[in-house]
Image (cartoon, each protein chain N blue to C red):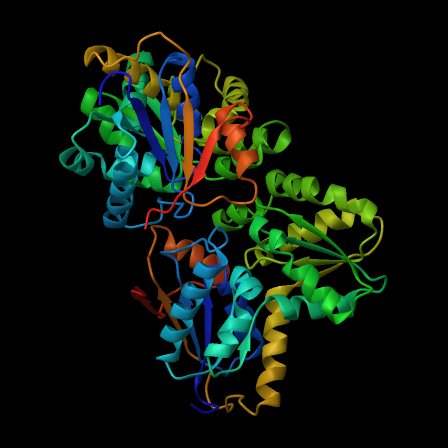
Length: 273
Length: 273
């Protein structure tokens, strides 16, 4: 393992490909190996013990690929299993929650932060903990916005339905006087423009949108620099994809999250059990 | 096992409670034992082999409760595992697809039937097979309507968002000249009124809506009569619920599907593994 080794990224499904996309945009010389545990998605409804076991399976599979660092591109795993993974895996490990929390605290002027995510992520309280751990004076207003996941997966990111869904979810936040919104789910970057548009209409003040995928890629860049693990600028990085199941519309959904088509990619279906 | 034994019902989650609700409405003297395999939901993204294994786990667990008949209130299991279950389980077994198909064929005058369901159910082709097996002249127009599941789970069954989502999904069906729509997912009965309203506006002709939960309860009543297994009219039937995991908003979602609150119900969390 050295600085030319790949970065390992895993998620319970394909949503983590938005994190891969942000990494490619910011770190074009890095090789990436991605594992989507699509056969066992969603993790969000499993017990913490089961999530830890699944996460360890994913991490161990990625270690077989001589990785130099592990990115947990899954909010559920980042919420419940990071500490245990760090004890068991001798590699730098980065989750998606701490980077999003850090970016939000930096972006907020009034110290009032909105967070949206899946029911499981919001119920875990992980963003509230991560944000107040950085600065206990921060007020966090968290809201589960479950309909945004199927909208993103379907590619239904424009028009009245996503617009009204976003409005419905954000209306109760207007009174809370937030000045930052964290997209606390790997699916939500696909809806960024409708969220920005609708939030802009609803709130009569500027609201910063923090994309935790981009925040994670930024923190990854710092971490690689700090550990002297950045790849040399020799050639564009490669991308390999592994999935544990290949659902019918795999290519369609994966290319939507990745922001490019899958032609020429090395895609393998593997078994973790 | 005799006619006073309970009816066993299982689903991958809580959606099957709409079938339980329909059974209670039509067969008030029957005892029901329901098993929701909430720890392993969704089945729709698993391989057929895995679905068969999970279904057998559920069926065997229900057999421990001295049941007289098994209702598979899960479209995925009904699509891929009924024949195998029938070989292995020596009980009358009823799925949700055949009753919905039968009711649709009976309701259609022009022989053009629309079916809506999850991506997995529609991709399986099970409704097309079930309907054309009854009458090969039937034309079936199937459409996946994935957003309707989270809308039903959230209880978001009124207003612009569900109305526009239904309109979006049904617009491509207008040209197909259907006169019946089958609700091919256990979640959709919660959206029946918005579907009926919107379909009524979109199509300039009457469209019958077939609720497969109600069709299943009707077929169950016939089957019990035929096998002389109907419970005696002594006392109102009991309902016991078992789940393999109890997610945070269990009570909220379960009561929404069941159409009543859960007070006084016998609810247990069990382990199938």
